[in-house]
Image (cartoon, rainbow, N blue to C red; front, side):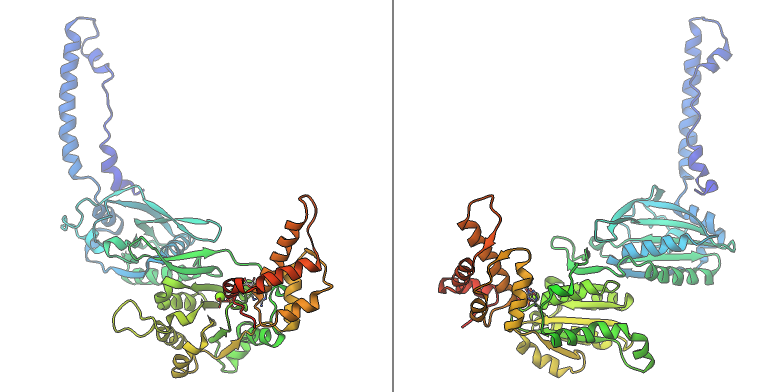
Length: 499
Ligand SMILES: Nc1ncnc2c1ncn2[C@@H]1O[C@H](COP(=O)(O)OP(=O)(O)OP(=O)(O)O)[C@@H](O)[C@H]1O
Ligand SMILES: [Mg+2]
């Protein structure tokens, strides 16, 4: 802490010398009057103390005093440089600022700002020596932090809610930084960093360096995130971390050419990006996965997320679809990135938050268009209502450069799915050909459920304590059950309505 600036506060703690030594000095005998004399002395000292205390309270280190103590008396006339970020970037701003402060040769002290909650102010107001009204209630104190998520497994980073950093640069010049987190209920959706420096160019340079450090140390990079909105909050945008799914290629049963098409567009473009760029080709790309429910569109996305380990993934769903612009901005900053919009048909007609806005789908397509050609960002859209999307996509060609149809599994794929979902379950496959023939037109999720039902039939038939073994009859019984007219709704739920 800046000693000179805090000195006056430290001096407020008086040495309490009510220890009787004065009384002893007055006399030293045990005369009855002596204690009364000592009391008078005590009273007098208490009076003086109250007086000096009140006088010095005036000199209490105000923030402006601290800051000008750091920057010198000319501080008031110095320019304030400001950088702002959306509220959800608070954790990254802190990470960037911390990294910037840790640069060897740079020293700093941190001063918390007490009473900031209901006051709109910046460094300009803090520097204004006469602007008492702005500083009303604002005073230096212990830094107040908030823990913000910085990883998928409950990782947190302590972030300053409102703090002043008194920084001494390696060359001896001085900078003061005010970091303030967003406060939606105060109508301040942004995180801001304000800087003032003894060297005006130094403050601007520091601002740029902190912005760059916030990108370099961005905790979202390489993570799987979803954009959402706080249901009961004040319209706060929430970014949530998710653990990256682990999924092998053997868990995704797709026709070889379908998978190859997806891989080429999503994975191979990234893999060959240097050469593609050198050859003047663009990297940004959009893939639409379409097909009936339950054929594995979401499953395919999961596989892509799992296999692109270094890629930042941003998922936009449900109530967060109007945050398309924000999501695109994060993707652009953290490329290579994949932006996933599932069930994109839901936004084909949906309009944004404000009247007169284009349907969200148009906004999405415009954002895709606005992205630089060389941005390594892949948009993966899914839908089971391609017919709803077609007019919009046709009206804005070129954003989605690959539409991949995911079809219902053919006989070979159904066999592969059967093997996959059978796992370690013992199954008598003597009647399997017939069973598979009867499942023409079902989805992958139907076959998954078929195996579980067969296992359940076997479990019901045999006593406890015996390992499960599905007989050919169990399998047929399970299929009969699922194909029964009474299970029409179940089939619909599984995405399957075979003839
Ligand atoms: N091709 C596949 N290979 C392996 N499993 C699959 C496949 N397709 C679907 N499944 C299984 O079925 C489940 C449901 O599939 P999924 O959610 O991917 O369907 P979807 O195409 O996204 O459907 P919707 O249009 O309803 O969103 C998956 O969780 C997975 O277990
Ligand atoms: Mg899906």
